[in-house]
Image (tube, rainbow, N blue to C red; front, side, top):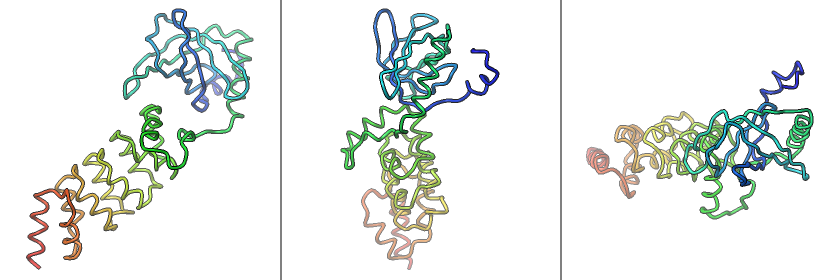
Length: 262
């Protein structure tokens, strides 16, 4: 857009999320969030109305200082978020004169200079489950899925409380997930049979007795998976498992028969 030869490379770079923004619509100013900011466009997310025109006016605010950049964008797509409620609007910058382009460069520099923040930085240690739930719901589903697959221990502790089966499935496949976390994850009522099978099949966890028992008593586990994880149990382990509530009745009868055959 600026005619610089390096623009094709620079426009492809996306900056971190969480930048305050305002959308102008029919005389109203609507607060939202800017994500995936580049030198060619931006994604606005929030409780937004469907765009009433092909182009919209909006403003981006620097995370530090008082800089506000007023821009105009062509609507590329508009769609509800994966979980409903919010709307995301992808915009391509238009009418980018030198003053707007320079202001955008200053904004991007401010974003890069600002300390990186995590999606759960606002939560205090020992936050109540309801606070964690609200923090999770504020993050778009695709972002939570991506985060679950690669994030560190602190964020995984929060994500484990997510109610989305796809988020929990991504968390189960996080290569840094530890056995204690896997045990806690196996207690989530929102796991799918496939995720339970993945946890039970993971080479790092499959020999852990506590995890195998947690999988076996889960209300959504398939009988085939439950039988597989308990196949090597000795008599003391079988008795311990039979004492647990919630065990599938078909599996319970099969396990009980194994105790009487010994």
